[in-house]
Image (cartoon, rainbow, N blue to C red; front, side, top):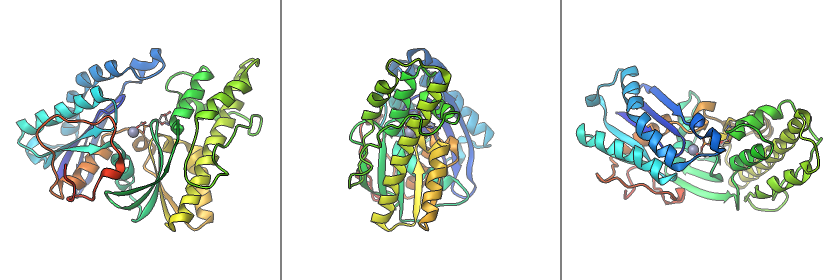
Length: 342
Ligand code: KG4
Ligand code: ZN
């Protein structure tokens, strides 16, 4: 089966084609970063309008690049949530319209399941069951992935997500939008230990996170200090170290708790090189292995949506022919492919 995937949950418009035998056949993405930069964050209305402009040409592009005629498709998958409602609606409406015109089944996919399944697009596929650390701009979660569609939430953040913490501190330091990757880049030039920030909840039992205190700690540390390039780099390093160390400590604790020997890291913050290096080393020391999607499949993309759609459409699932999306949607509500009441 061959599936067209459409992603529009936030500020990335994307389309991709995945085939059950040949794997990923093509993907195209337009990032709206330039559009939102001057506002310092995503403006939902602008995001929706831009998706409307971008999505159809992206769909045409991936179909052409992958040599796929509409009649060769077995279905269309789109991100149905969680995300910005207006943005989600643009992708849902397009997917539903194309599916109606081409007489194809259509399926609304959970964005976070897309992130969790992204490592399956790589050559080395993680075994099931495994532990997943899902770290994005909106979520920080440790999930016991028993099998596809069976997700047990072990712990999540009580306040800000890890990516949000990266972004907020970057804004405080006056770094250009989007802040997370910029802060990470600057951290490579900073000296470790010059600024020490709290490792919230690291030493408490349990698998929960809390990152909202970091922004205040940084604000206090840089108060009455000239923000020279060197100070900014040292602060960036201190913040990255605090976030990475906390994520590593809790991920290792969750590995011990579940007894799993494989850890999947997914979501935008999974592109962070320091996190990747430290998790890999720490897991190896305990005989566990870490699986990552390639960095461009850590952040939002349509390949992961096409794949999640393929898995479920080929098990016979499909959504009704109505444009329905969900701003909030717990991943624990999902069921294994073919068993869902969608
Ligand atoms: O998964 P994603 O693309 O979108 C959401 O679903 O949220 O994640 C975006 C988040 C942003 O907060 C961004 O700053 C962060 O991932 N991010 C990074 C890096 N690349 C993206 N954070 C730290 N280091 C990076 N290299
Ligand atoms: Zn995402």
